[in-house]
Image (cartoon, rainbow, N blue to C red):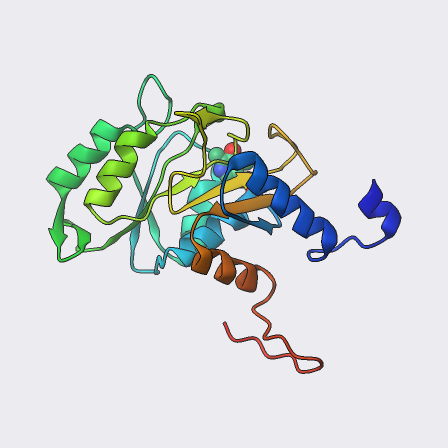
Length: 220
Ligand SMILES: *Cc1c(COP(=O)(O)O)cnc(C)c1O
């Protein structure tokens, strides 16, 4: 209400900074960057994880379409690995099976044998706020050097081993859409503990404008 009364309703400014600081405090993440929605937070996270159009991205079939849409916006292709009956999220066992049987390590990369494509990221979802088996998924992804991006759209307020969901992967994406735990009508946030990623996320989500008093130069 205060933001609206001030008439300073914008994608930048004091209220956005405060919102990001509150998200850091609440989740325990070092950095938070606001986005227009959860889909944009996922899309941006995939770009920041260096996913390219020729890549594959592992995710789960039980989700909302936004997860796959974000992957598609890059031109990359989703690969579905089934969910675990207990968590309703990506099964660590099935992921390990898939990587062992269908992929091979080439240098520091996991390559899908059949398509020869790179596995560029893994995006599990905390379905209905139930945390996935993060401990095991983090281990497997580290073993194969696959960036882990948590689709935490539905899991604000959910913790795993006393740590907030979204803070275990390289990045976590939250949503504040009308159907989520907390809503701003629409909105999203990327959380990360990586300073470089946070800096680049802020730059890209604010049109990649190079600071200058009058020139509009966008470097990305
Ligand atoms: C809601 C949701 C999103 C997308 O968030 P929006 O803010 O609606 O763009 C992504 N993933 C999951 C799992 C969701 O439930």
